[in-house]
Image: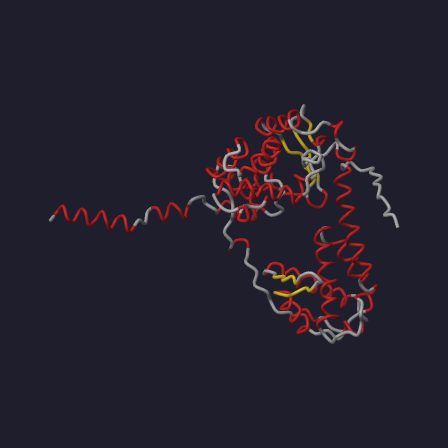
Length: 383
């Protein structure tokens, strides 16, 4: 049976690729909802109206996994399919059962015909799963579908606060090494160098945009050629919750982008119709995926830090790099918050506290062994 092609009839100001991505997320949510019992309609409506689309999708995936856990790992239901779990069975679930589910999620196995997959989740992921189930049972209680609100009995999960974490960002000298690598091919393997020769202008434009504006990965991936108004010196991005934001262009960004567009990017005549407006293209002439951009950033940041590719930084770390660099140059945290689209300025303040090189400077002044040896030399001379 042929799969129907989805056509977007876009009457909004948003470009088609942004609308298509939003629709893909919504479609994924709707497909999961079909797998779940119909009495969860109130929960579905709550998610639609109160959380971002990606969060809605994550919550629905968590609930589907929780219901499958009830079938596979407990005797709480007689159902063989998720949608057949009865409300009466869900009403018998206790706080201890949810706590056991969260504990199960720390590390579990999935068997297939070809392999056994081991999944491990950190506390941040466990906290989200707990939140997904908590919202479910609270909503069922509000809708008077279950007799008790069992969420007060859920075990707390210790999640490190942002203020307790060390901000990971490139230092200015590492940024220079990274830009040298992308400009000249320094530090690349023979295979990477051959690939770099075809994409160096694109790669540099991507890194410069991340470093200058602290863009989120999705914001950069969705950029189009038509996003840029060169005569007005600005470009448009789409933030969380569908917010539009105009960003000013500086000379560096304008230079590297136009160099890429004019001298490396495939001509429109070589592209399929729906790819002609995509800014960053793969070698196959397709819009780059978020995964491809993430791997690109990891490669160049690993060169900057002299570490393995696997230990390279994510695009979000370049967002942190932009924040710490801007604040380190004396810019107002309120201005930086506006540029990065932080809803709370307290988030930006975390980067202000991250004084660069402070640990290195402190340790540099505590050269015990060198001082010991110099002291011995001095003592010998006095004698």
